[in-house]
Amino acid sequence: MSLFSLFLLFSILLNIISNTSAFSSQPGICYGQLGNNLPKPSKSISLIKSLNAKRIKIYDTNPQILTALKNTNLQVSIMLPNELITNISTNQTLSDQWIKSNVLPYYPQTLIRYLLIGNEIISSTPNSTWLHLVPAMRRIKHSLKKFRIKKIKVGTSSAMDVLETSFPPSNAAFRKDIAVQVIKPMLRFLNRTGSFFFLDVYPFFPWSSDPVNINLDYALFRASNVTVKDPGSGLVYTNLFDQMVDAVYFAMEKLGFPDIRIFIAETGWPNGGDVDQIGANVFNAATYNRNFIKKVIEKPGTPARPGLILPSFLFALFNENIKPGPGTERHFGLLYPNGSWVYEIDLLGKTPESEFKALPPPENNEPYKGKIWCVAARGSNVTALGEALSYACSQGNRTCDPIQTGKKCFKPDSVFWHASYAFSSYWAQFKKIGGTCYFNGLATQTAKDPSYGSCKFPSVTL
Image 1 (cartoon, rainbow, N blue to C red):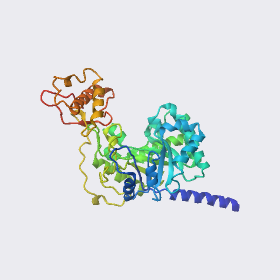
Image 2: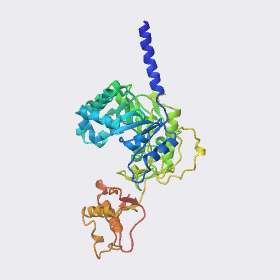
Image 3: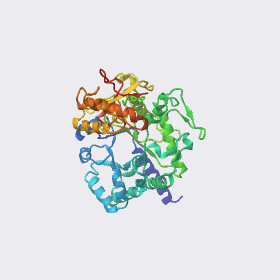
Image 4: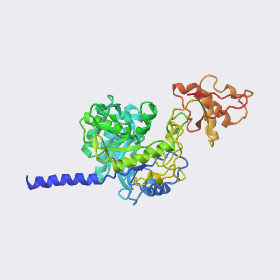
């Protein structure tokens, strides 16, 4: 072997070693901002540092946050919003300007290391956007190169619904509508640029949709006698998380890209939720996250990729009270907005379980059976509540007749009580066809009957 060949081989090995050593197995934190009661960015960054996090993910390029992150040694993941993807995909000047406005004022003092193009765009945007994803990634990468920025990896986050089949993992494949036109070009880009497949992995969702056939301990990393064997690969799984991650590895391999690394862009377990949401409680959330930390630090990799470090972010820093969707969406935080623990956690994975404060026992690990009502949330804005009341009353069949003047539920004559009746009546009519008890965060579920006197609130029975 020539001296040049030896030098080239040494350089390649050195590059691999340096890249691998740069990946900490210690999870980072997702810092979402969909709350109207969250602390200022400077305080939030102090809280993140107190947790001994090494990296942080935000869902935009918030100037206050990026400024507060200067000279902190926290690695940062930022995001280009979904709505800009289409325009940037066809306009290099716009891409350059976005980098100039949103990256250059902070880099390199703020250690921006990852730039995600959109958030779960296959799940959350019209399919007309999908074909613009990879062109937008190329534009942004070109802009970074133009400004001589080499340390920022470009990618995008994907949910598990990019897969058409996921079980057994060796049989997994990407959906037919995206595999060739979207995913394969994206994998080619990630492979060429040395970036990651950023993946959101939530064992809570498959478990909660099928708690009879999926063991809860298997989902929480604490199954001592539950294993799942993949008949195709022969690999044996001891937890649902590994099973889900390996499904994506196998799907990428089928498209010809076996070497792209996965970065866990989000994972976690809800600490609370709606009455009808099974298993969303503090005990399970603490158990999942504590065990996840130990798993990625002490036993890195998966059965298909043993020993390979999985960089990751835990979702999320705070409970975020204005996130839309089911109640679980507002209950993924490690902390309450006032900075106190929802439950204790050690991102270093060194604290023995016995040293944490005792957790409240889980009370909803079995499906709720009984009646549920949908009522106005305490503290709701009266004006917004009035608008939601009007909307609910305009839907369905005689939804609000009992709260009309002189009727059984007219008194007490208040927007709060009238809205509570209207919400329950609306939900009782429309839940079976997708109606929700949300009303832009103004409504909440309750198992306590709000009926009074001769006024009977409609309910949903599970």
